[in-house]
Amino acid sequence: MRRARRMKAAAMLLAGSMALAACASDEPESGSGGGGGGEGGDLQIGLAFDTGGRGDRSFNDSAVAGVEAAIQEHGGEVTELSPNADASNRADLLTQLADQGFNPIIAVGFAYSDVIGEVAEQYPDVTFAQVDGAVADAGSPGNLTGLLFAEEQGSFLAGVAAALKSETGHIGFVGGVETPLIQKFEAGYVAGAQAVNSGITIDRQYISPAGDFSGFNDPARGQIVAQGMYDAGADIVYHAAGGSGIGVFQAAAASGGRAIGVDSDQYQTVDDPALQAVIMTSMLKRVDNAVEAFIGEFVDGSVAGGEDERFDLESEGVGLATTGGFIDDIQGEIDDYRQQIIGGEIEVPTTP
Image 1: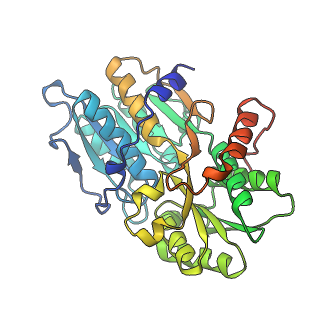
Image 2: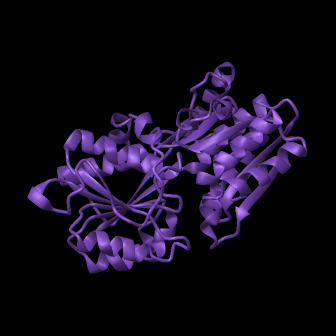
């Protein structure tokens, strides 16, 4: 796959960018100068965040890292916008960026699927991309590219790691919002753990129901949910909960347990050494590489548009972080399962 080859070439994680902790806001934030779109012919990128915005040390910050890497290579600048408290202004954010002349515009998160298609049709000369959004779900506009991931494959490996390292035979999963996307993480994690130990106990709970996106930005509730799992006997909990994951790490630290991060290498992005010490690994969802590659193709004039691009284990679009060395002793077994997935011997489920 053309995109997969570019993906491998772009495998660079900017840990410094990921560690930025600026607060999310619905006011524009500009990097590398902050001018308006289209001035002087320079690359002008518009970035519309998911709930939690910049500083979530996970999903949104991974997109930031990709943009920053692209700017480092190609020059230009970025303006960032975050949704309001109830995320009702997502269409307004995209429209604002398009009106100001930004191109390309990248929407971060599946929740933009309800609005990005209509906006893209209103601005046919603007190139859009959506992380975690399929083009078909947005009405198939020709100027939209979907950046999709095989989250279930990376989560399968996270489940393998959890089952191999668990001393209690009891692990947990905390999802941010109960949606089909996050259920892919759950499904893969459960399948991986059960592949190692068919009798393992796996607690599963979501912070908020479908339609309530607060579950991605509520560390206090994330801590309560995870604490209940540790109290019940789980010794490792995997979260797919965005900014709420910090609460899962706090519960792990308080309980003497371990946790698995998501999207970014969260061992590198947390500030507190006590939390860093409990992060056994993270399921890497290389949003940074996908965003960087997309911007590179925009600069090259090679964006096809109207198509989805999928990033999986084979293209190194998902995987497990090894920072901290906590899973070094089981790397051989993890690699074996990885090759079985790539080779088609294991088909990972996408629904629980």
